[in-house]
Each structure stands twice: as C-alpha cells, then as structure tokens.
Length: 446
Image (cartoon, rainbow, N blue to C red; front, side, top):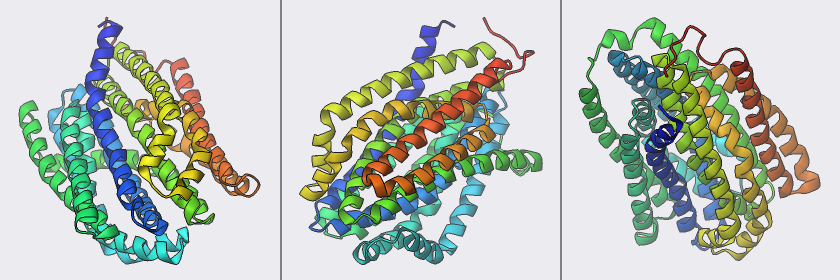
C-alpha cells in the first residue's frame, strides 16, 4: 500500500478522536468559563483543585484505555476475535474493582488531596463539595475509559467519538442549566458530570454489544479470567499506571505550587492549563491512530505496515503542532478573555501566555511516541522515560519558583515535555537499530 493511502487511513482513524478529544478540553473550558463568571475567584480555584483530584484519579486509571487499546489492536490484527472480547471483559472487571475502591475510600482520598494541595479555606470548602458529589460517577467514568480503549483497538474510532461526544455534550448542557439556570454553583458542575458519565456508560454498552456481534467471535468467561492473559494485562497496565502516575503527579505539583502563589495565580494557571489540555487531546487523536495501526500491524506480523503507520502518524502530528502554535499565537489572548472576565486573572495569564505558544512544538514528540509504544505494548520503556522526565521536572519546579516566580513553573513544565520526548526518541532509535519492533522473521508485505 502506498504511503499516501496510509495518510488517508490514519486520517480516517484520527479525525473522530481529534474531534472527540477536543470536546474534553472544551468541557473543561466551559467549566472554567461558567464558574469563572461567578463573582469571586475562589469558585474558579475550587473547580481547578477539584478537577485536579479527578484528573489524578482518572488519569491514574488511564491504563484501562491504553492497555486495552494496544492488546485489542494486536488481537484484532491476529484475527483472534474471541480474545478481543476477553480483553474488554478483563478491562471492565478491573474498572469495576477500581471504582469500588474509590467509593469506599472517598473520605480519606478527599481529605488527603486537599491537605496536599493546601488551597485557601474558601477554595477548599467549595472544592470538597465538588469532590464528594462527582466521586459517585466513578463506576461509569472508569467503565467508559475501558470502552473507549476497546473501540480504538477494534479500529472503530467513530464509536469512541459517539461515546465521548455524548458524555461531553450532555455535561456541557447540564453545566449551563445547573450552574447558570438553577444557580447551583460548583455543586451543579459536579452533578452535570455525574449524570453525563452514566449516560455515556449506557450508550457505550449498546455500541460495544453491536460491534462485537458485527465482527464475530464468542464470549468465553474462562478466557476472560485466564491467569496468563490476566497477568500480561496487569503487567502492561502496571507500567502504564506508573508512567501516568508520574504525569499526574507533575501536574499536581504544578497546581500545588500555583496555589501557594495566591488565588489569582492559581486561577490564571487554571485558565492556561486549558491550553495544555487542549493540545494534548488534539495530538492524542493521531497518537490513538498510531496505537491502533501499530498494534494491528504487530498482531498481523506486518513490518512494512508498522513502519508506514509510524511515518504517516508522525507527519500529521507535526502538521497539527504547527497549526496549534499559530492558533495560540494569534488567538491566545482572546481565548483567555473568553475563559474569565476577572481582570486580575486575565492580566496574570497574559504574562505567561508565550510559554503556551511554544509548548506544542516541544510536547508533540513525546505524545506521538507514546502512541507508538502503546500500540506495540513497549510499556516498560514508557514508564522509564517518564520517570526520567519527572526526576528532571520536580526539582526544577520547586527550585525555580523562588528566583523566577511563575515563569519558573512554566519552564519546568517545558522541560518535562522535552525530556519525555527526547527519551522516547532515543529508545525508538535504538529499537530501530536492532531491527525494529518485529523480529527479522516477521512477515513483510509489499
């Protein structure tokens, strides 16, 4: 297959995920905009801290998506359709177990989280209200993460698009209705998210059942619980969990150090983090395509398909990075004004906007390579590289904050992405030098 055909194939997989992923930061932006128009900055700070806690919890469980995608894509490429069903079963079992733990330990988790962040008393009071409502959406939210990963692995990103747009669309509408219409404030934003999560679970279950029937295969409970397969699933997910834990700890440290500079800086950084989340999710659309295509090629033992998928996904990621820089450079200040009408917050955010304009060009490499390494299930390499990046980032964030203020925090964030991308790049080149992700006996297509 010619490379131009691979570009079309990548685009067909990626565009639904780009659209659906962009709805996620859009949801965060709507939360910020709705709460940001309440009369005091501590409301915005409360949502920022509450969202941080759930990002920590749910991003920590993101292995449910990433591990499910890579393994499902490989089983799909090998045409082992019974195994694709079994992988979904394992992922949903683990999601249910994790949700039960979160609900049982919600009190200690909430109190510990706010103790570590150390927000002002006003932020903590509203943030705790947000947390103890939204936690009840955990079973649906985690099951939704597993379903999205399975849809991507099954090469059906439109199903993932339908699920994510449903969840985020309902969430946005209920945000506006409950917060602005019924004036429920921070609690309204939390209830909107819970309701949207359960609506998404209902839709996702229906779509998954239809997709499984379309492709064939059988549900085999014994295969779902197969000890060797479960150990492999857990091992891969352990590596991804640790990798993700370093990522969310880095953002937690960022928000914590922001909070210690006052409510205005905390609110300004909360606004600017929407820019970071936006480009992360946009790039992830093509990273997800890389996961699906490389995993399928690996399962089918097609070395040339693997290489072509990598080249095509990289090109699209670089194009998107340049486009993001242009958008941020031209429209960054107006976007800040949309997100909040608090003049003090607008002024502080504007001072640090140049960091966000440059950051996409630094971040794109690590995000893209995460997709390649997830699809090929080289998860230990992802874990080790992220550990290295965090070891560089954490002391820089702590030490640079005093001499450079908030600029020190954004410099540290840039270093985190730079080290992550460079580390994965070095590992990738070493793998290629040793013959690539498939052994020399792997099948080559023409």
